[in-house]
Length: 299
Image 1 (cartoon, rainbow, N blue to C red):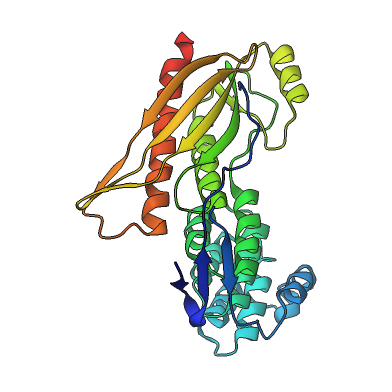
Image 2: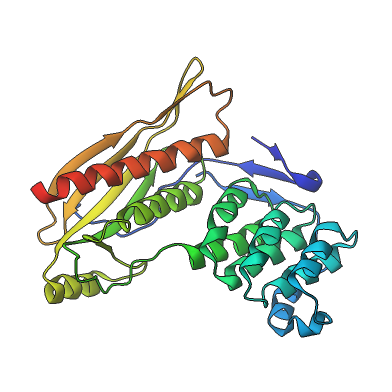
């Protein structure tokens, strides 16, 4: 079903596909039509590293933020966003987060790239919210890069208090949302929730099975993979529910050692929109992580 976006953009969504990820123990297709930006985004991204506060007439963060928020020319706003990326100043985060809602895609892309370059975790929530509703693919690409740069990551080198080593495995998407949206939301929520507990280390994205085996052997940790299945959202009057299942698999012998389920429900939901469903998916994934933490000692 088409969704209208800013500047008359439309996003068409097809059927879901399972998310990609390592499977242990065992979509919707997004098409975006948007008016081409007057200034190619690739040129703007290549230009960004050359900009500096000095190149902006020694403009202060406040002056750049004012240009970003108020100048009528999107090219000036875009340049201001890229200049803010070079300031290394925490004060640049707020105006750049606001610019993620700018009417012009070049400005939104520049703001996302700038936030990724600044590397301040405070921008993560704004980037994730913008990514959910963004319909211009080139902007989503910049937002996705920034989100991945800011999200907590497993290091492959567990800390001294680590007891468990967790691989976030396959995310199977049975919902009506795009597989990439579901996979990103689930993996990010699981990773962030598990890493708050020093007893849990999380394997970095892209780690091979051989590398995982080496970590388990050298650190003498208990290893598990979490494979997640996300069901279609369920509506019952004004109640909207989202069911998630987790299968816990031993990394030693590939046995299924536990299965868990979460069903977060929102009362008063007027529509099954993407933001609402992804919010429930995030809550469900966090609930699965909490259940796993509680049961891990008995596995």
